[in-house]
Image 1 (cartoon, chains in turn red, yellow):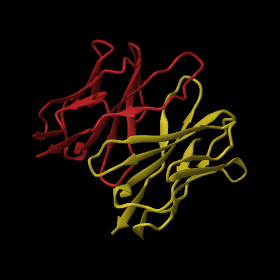
Image 2 (image 1 turned 120 degrees about the vertical axis):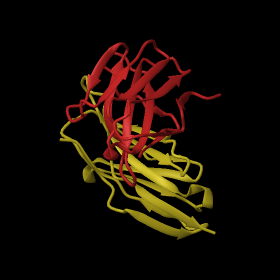
Image 3 (image 1 turned 30 degrees about the horizontal axis):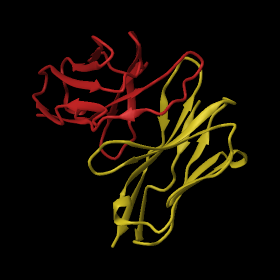
Image 4 (image 1 turned 30 degrees about the vertical axis):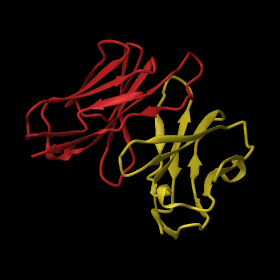
Amino acid sequence: DAMVIQNPRYQVTQFGKPVTLSCSQTLNHNVMYWYQQKSSQAPKLLFHYYDKDFNNEADTPDNFQSRRPNTSFCFLDIRSPGLGDAAMYLCATSRESAGNSYNEQFFGPGTRLTVL
Amino acid sequence: AQKVTQAQTEISVVEKEDVTLDCVYETRDTTYYLFWYKQPPSGELVFLIRRNSFDEQNEISGRYSWNFQKSTSSFNFTITASQVVDSAVYFCALSFGGSNYKLTFGKGTLLTVNP
């Protein structure tokens, strides 16, 4: 029954040690998103894939990268995590078509990243 | 620029009370969508409702109701007869057109329903 799955739910990494977060979906949605949510704040969009097209937000640090090898999977790579990157990372999906960008996004449970 | 304001940072009520969460938005687009999401302590954002800018009809779903007023740029959310399980952070969000599928979120309102 799971629709948007994120692994792991909790991730601990060391300062500067690369880390990869995973997201998969069974909805066959063509758009996948990565959000960063820090404590008591709203989710902040980092980037999204529309099909295979990658769209980076202007203020997303270069330290954050993403890969989408196929429709179902999307990865968030943090090349050199800093203490300020500790947050909840949320993956979301939606089904979009040309001229219609208003569909609801379905969110996964998130991965809480701790940086030591 | 797009902006969503949820002026209420925290609300605390006693079970069975009615509670209204406020949302005010700003946009220059004539076509846009408004959303409400619920984020329980488990962390997952749960979609509650979507409303497009051309449909000002209010909506009721069980104990939930939404009041959309374009004249005041507001999209308020009311929970009737609140329950402990309603305790969560509630986010109002705005989506606009073009090639950008970005959701602009408000800062959220933490609702605590006490038994």
